[in-house]
Length: 183
Image (cartoon, rainbow, N blue to C red; front, top):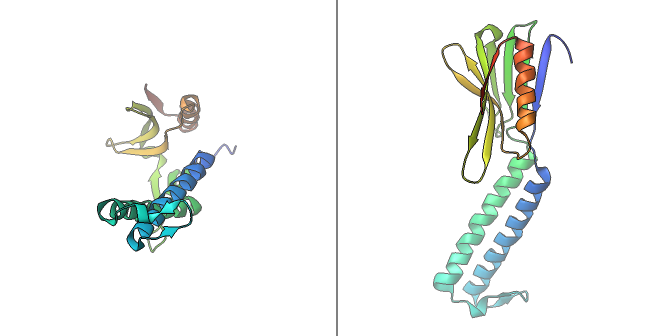
């Protein structure tokens, strides 16, 4: 590690789980779509999509709408995954005395997000853990002077409390600022 630059890469986690979820969602939505179409044309598509046994209105129409919606959502998730939206880095450069937060965005003219702040504007680092009904969100936040809060690391991983604490401690030590632990 360079003593003047600290760079933290932000990557997508749980790629295997995300792939399996996308695959299951895609096949399920295609099944609904084919069943809705089979119901509309009142024919059997393949062996498992017997549309002649389902009345088009309202059951077939509902399945068709679920199939279209699920397929579009799955395509959106796959595109988001393929282009690595949200990935990037946090860089703290002592020689240039600046902090850079970079994230990849959607394609277009202003696709990427890059925030630059002077290092002397950073007041403290805060670890925030929010327990919700089905998950626990763990965040590392930078608090700037004037109480502006910028999230730099966000995760929902089950076993990452120690990892989050280590990254926040490393950053606070590197910048020589205080660490607020909100556990």
